View (tube, rainbow, N blue to C red):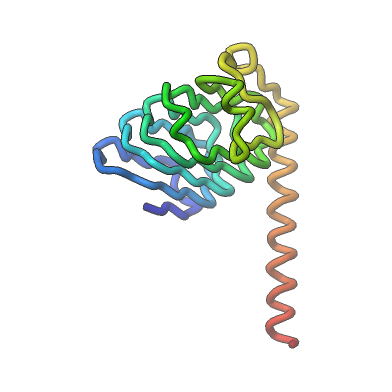
Length: 164
């Protein structure tokens, strides 16, 4: 299932009991990702989506999770089944300080488990809730820079198409 829209502020998949792979892109509203009722969620991919909190503790069938270019602050991946996860990727989420996992040694030893900010930890309670106004402002500025870069790239490709 794919959700791609700037107008979506809330979606409820709690009634879905089937196995599910979900792609969420370009959501501008700040939303929390609570997939606790979707225990058969196998994959989650989110690019340029404004997830702030992501709770994947009940998703024991999860094999892939990738959240990039967003405003993610908190991820709870402590689902008692991290060994099943092939890929866990959290890139370009400047507010992210900690991803809570079952076993920090396992998470750090996996080649397809990547963070470009923050740490993997078995207890993130000291990190969560510590976001300041300055961090939120920093995230807003970076998101605006990313949007400008995307627009500039789109203009370049349009120029290339029309003039070459």
